[in-house]
Structures are given as structure tokens and as C-alpha cells.
Image (tube, rainbow, N blue to C red; front, side):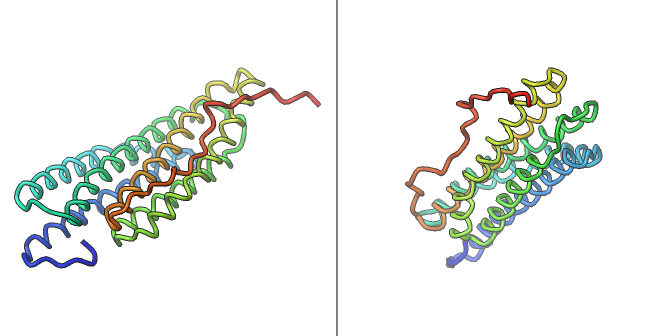
Length: 240
């Protein structure tokens, strides 16, 4: 791993191979999320199809990493920092696989949305998409660099994604209450927004695992969390 050297060169090569598999998976997932967001925001069915087609590739890479980790643990019996990195890598690939699933779900919903007239602009969703993609790119770069500081930046910025989700949640619920015709499209938009919020959560999980792998210290303070949609009370706007 970054900053370490091993006497057995083949072992070092195996650890490098593991890292390259995870960064490959991260790049694939990053592209999948970008395509899913494009599908929603630009009504792009081609992008939606491509995002969904990538999901089996992400799943296959997760299985490959899992098998590779099992082999490393059995043959090399790693200790200390190497063991932290290997076990954390396995956890991170699980989060990446879930991000891919959420991206595929967003893409599927975008296709359904094509049959509806949307009740509002997608500016809130666009902002949320941008924040999620920025965090995802940053944490994937951090994996490749073994950068604990970047991981900490991602961990701290999840609250902004939650705040954006809360505002969007309230806006869409208000539209649904004021006009029953908007219920179906707004429901799909709510699911899309929640999927994006969960992508942000999994990026934060990766940040926690990467920080621990690099520093040997867990992030013990409470995770910044701002999703209050479960407690939201939304009232219809008063008629002017």
C-alpha cells in the first residue's frame, strides 16, 4: 500500500493489484452515477440504458475483489497495516456495489418519468446530483492516493447533501399535497432523490473505512448527519 515496502516483491504486486481493482470499480461506479444523473436531468434514455448495463460489470468486479481478498488472506496471512487495508478494501467494494445499485435505480426511474409532465424545475435535484458526484469523485481519488485528508473532507461534507435532500423532499411533498396530478411524478422524483442521498451515505462509509485503513484510527466523533425527512411536517402553502 502507499508508503510501505515489502521484502517479497510478489506480495507487493498483489497488494497493488488489489488497489487497482478497487480503483477500477470506483471509476466504473463514478461513470454509472454520472450517466444516471444525466438520464434524469436531461431526459436521456440512452444514458439510462448505459447506466443499467454497467451494473452487472460492477457486480462482477465486486466478486473478483472478494475472491482476491480471500486468496490474499489465506496465502499471505497479512498483519497490522496490510490487514487493515485488505479488510477495509473488502468493505469499500461492498459500498461501491451498493452505489452502483442505486445508480441503476435512478436510471430506471428516469425512464418512467418520461411519460409525465414534471410539476417543477429540476434545479434542486441538479444541485444534489452535483454534490453527490463531487463527493464520489473525491473519495475514489482518495482510494487511489491512500489520502486520509480527502477521506475526511468527504466525511464532513455529507451533511450538505442531506440538507439539500431535506429541502427537495419538502418541496416535492408540497407539490403532491397541492395538486393530486403531481403525485406520480413527484413520487418518482422522491425515490430518485433518496437514492442519491444513499449514494452520498455510502461514499461516507468508504471515507470512514479509508481513513481507518490509512491512519489506524477510527473516526470516533459522531457522523455529521442532516437527513430529517422522517420527521418532516409539511403544510400546504396558503393561497395568495
